[in-house]
Length: 350
Image (cartoon, rainbow, N blue to C red; front, side, top):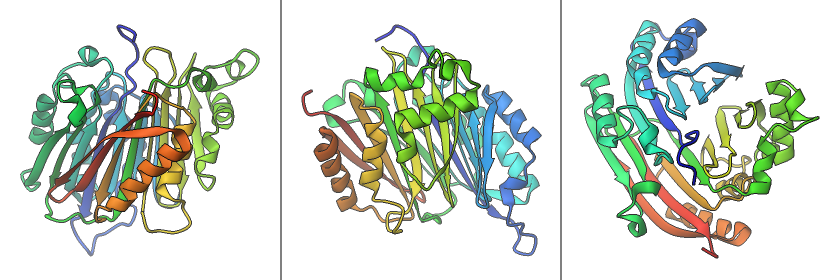
């Protein structure tokens, strides 16, 4: 592994709000926040918008370091590299207050960095990150919990741990949605070539056109055929995309360089809504694009009851279709924020 390189693992922040008044309730909610204000927040975080798309349900922004999604009562922002994501909490709460919304819940999560020593304070220590988040939140979010989910076969090495902090004003989650986050390292070298600009191809196109070519060549467009894809290619390599499918979002980010290669796939869905594909099949298509040496999957059940059979089915399908063996499975519950299941996979040959 390289001594230092670009940090692919993202930090992820989700803020959920409620309307202060029933009589003064604009259905656009957070989407009323003007772009200039969002751009100022992103400047503090140390990233910028490079592409955007919207539909009737939400706004999706591809960032220079990952993605931002703005729903009427929810904001999801994930950033990679050495960005200062936690600096967005206070200004986002303030902007929401200006459109008559109050914070209901906060979730901050991340994997374990490939280059932890390259991170600025407080991101070198999860306990310090939790302190910063808690200091940024109102006292009304009184149900709080932090957890570092470390696989049992990895207790002395947190390089594959999942870090979660939640805070909620409610005892029970108010939103029925499942969020699946997939982190992949040691990408197949041949597959990773799709995310380098090619002479006579991606290299000579602009970032949007090159992004579309990478989407097609890699097979990303087959993961969810119903989604409209907003993609972007970085120079000389790297790729990001946001998928928009009704109320559902998906996002992929790729750092293809050998030695610290990384890709992530995330989507929000309902487990029991027919017509949008079995979760295990969707994950199979996403992971198959990259053929990674190591895979971790964090599944967050917001308002949906934890379904052990779904977890087992994911393990069976990934084993059958991709030869990936589940090495560990952990589950933790968070007051007012549902349950999180964290699974780690490697090829059977390892």
